[in-house]
Amino acid sequence: MTNSLISIQIIPKTKSGEDVIPYVDEAIRVIEESGVRYEVHPLETTMEGDFTKLMDVVKKMNDRMIEMGSKNVISQVKILYQPDGISMGQLTEKYR
View 1: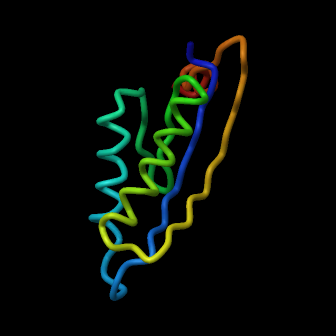
View 2: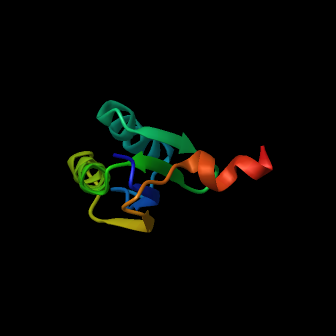
C-alpha cells in the first residue's frame, strides 16, 4: 500500500571534490531500479510507496554513494507517513 511519501536530497562527499552530479544520477538510478513511483525535482526527489520499502531505497542510495568512493553522505529526508494511504497526486492535484 502507498502509505508514505519520502523526499530525499543526497549530498555525497566526493573523493577529490569532483562534481556530484554523476553521483546524484546514480542515486536516482537506484530509485528507478527499485520500481517505486518517484518524481525528480530541482533540489530533491520524492518517492511514493510503502514506508519500509522506501526506507530500504534510502539505505541503498547511501550504500551506493560509498561504493562509488564517497567518504560520507548527507541525506536530507522528509517523510510523510499516512497509514490509510497517500499519494503525490493527492497533495498536488489543486496545482495541476
